Image (cartoon, rainbow, N blue to C red; front, side, top):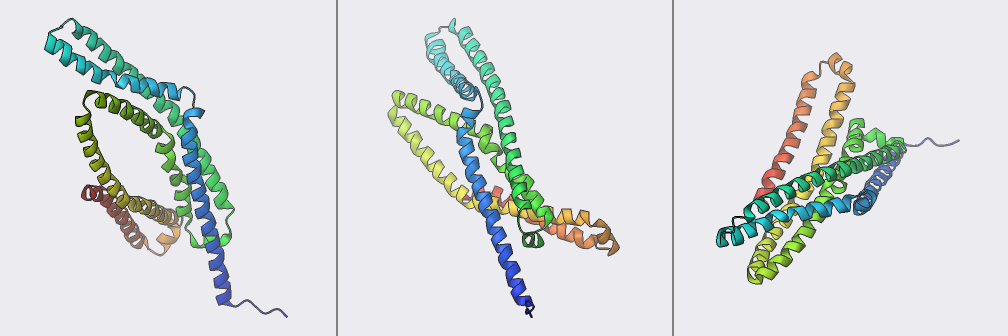
Amino acid sequence: MKKPISKPADARSRRQRFASAFLRFQRFRLEHRRFAREQSADVLLRVPHVKRARTVSRAAGLVLPATSKFLIDEVVAKHRVELLGWLAAAGGIATLVQGATSFALSQLLGVAAQRSITDMRKDVQRHVERLPVAYFDSVKSGELLSRVMNDAEGIRNLIGTGLVELSGGIVTAVVALGVLLYLSWKLTLVNLFALLVFGGGMTIAFKRLRPLFRARGQIQAEVSGRLVESLAGIRIVKAFTAEKHEEVVFAKGAHRLFRNVAKTMTGAVQAA
């Protein structure tokens, strides 16, 4: 005759199954983060005409600083008024070209980012449904809903326009650095020192803010999970006249989220 499983042993086995499922879910999220980084590196090759439009946009952005140089050196200093119309035309055309290419980039990369977000959501939902039942016994359904729908939004800027802005900014900075070194290497080194000090301050600020941004997703998932369960069981809540209790619980969660957001805003200023 088989011996019945004791409750402590059964509880331990449930905790072990939950821990195993939780680790599997965390590994799955880390794999998708690596996938997002790899995908962001290839997005310029997958989306047609993006590299060309980015180059044109950055080249047009360099026209306005060049026109200001000619305006001061030629029109103001040497009184060559006939160049004023050409400079105004060049600046206007460059502004139109930069605006058009920036709009085209936002449209192309916006669609690519949304496609990647949709694929990631489908993968996360497929993985969550295959987790053991013990995991669902310990996690709110609303929290899982928030994880599936909101966590994928984190790659929007990574794959979308943020990637092009970053790469284009690097290209512009390298070109501008070369020009500045050619004009005056002493003033350029002074500016580089100021930029390094600013970059060090931003690094310290982001080190302090990164845990807060991670905690924000967890808090938002918990608040959303509690709200979804409260609205799904609204008949039970009303039957026990627990509206005030649910209101207090949601208010506490909302204030936790507010304090986290406020700390990210004031913490950056303090760190800088």
